[in-house]
Image (cartoon, rainbow, N blue to C red; front, side, top):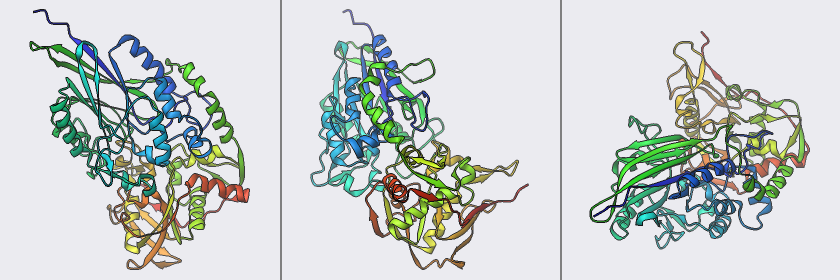
Length: 532
């Protein structure tokens, strides 16, 4: 009996594109090594070399750029750009990310309905019936020589901790690990695939190489546990954390291709025939294909979205007001060490629109540069990059102290030089500058020379020590109000007031109404440490 030759199946995975179709970060001019239009060039090349190929998206495609924000908030006509992109590149399946829900279920539903490929979700279910809410937990793909590949989609079940309740109304989020095992058993029994690919919008809670925890084990990310505990998985495609990972763990090939289209994951499965006519995997490889200066953008894809992009760029360049005084951020790290006019402005806006007595806000990234004298929409969305809303949370004085102690963990002192640095836990597995807040309405000092948990050496309001038993209304973004960023002392505290408007709109409206905003800084807080 002559058995057929071995067959290689290629999987390509994008994840956390966050609306980056064009190769730009929208902060300024210049072609960047990112975006789906450039990845498209790699996809076309791979398809020409590997015809037995599946192209999968692992979530967080609908949100993250001014391009997507402008469509969601100001345009909204026609087919959603994400669906148009998925269709143009002939994706075989997509998975829901947590940011898919940011603009509500109506917009999400229209994007899903307009996509030619299925959106897979095994653990997002109806609140009443417990059935997969979007219809399709998995998809079986019939490949050359009769090889059958099963692709199962799951999403981090932590979404209710972050998302606005109205945006996930009627949905329940089951444990991703448990749901995956249930559906793997179903698929293996009923479908008998030759390989099973788990496409998980979540990441690794432990270092794949050492098994050491890389974050608090909250259950938000379960990739390591999936590789070591789930039976019947051949490939685990991940995302959510924006890490660059590829390898094999416990016989499972895994990959995670970063964010914004900086790379694409490539997994190849080499099958060999068996005597009974089935196929078995002989070899697996996982790697990342990175963008560099040699990769050009797909001109056809750029042309498809040219009108949308022009509208976005024109909107971004609209002047909306001016700043009197210095509100620039030349050095974000320095701006996180003492009260700054830009963060004070954001906090003051939050306090004014909610009438809260205390506020906290973050400089989200190291690319934030504040406002120059002329302010455009580009300035607003470049500094405030997330579609957060505001919530007023009632906290005790002790809760506030614990939140400040959590903030103080952002810093560490170099043992050799004594210089102030960002703690490694805020840089790996991905930068988390957004999890360091600066507060207004209280006076405080953080002494980084003290042990963690004892760094708040001053905490007052109007010159009086903050009563740990007293209650205070604090305004913060919706992500933080749910305890996001390991702020468990805030999670599940009473919500006194909600402002359902996107914070970007709040800031823009505030500036447009006043035309001129004035830089101010009351120097109510600072970080201190001994200088060697």
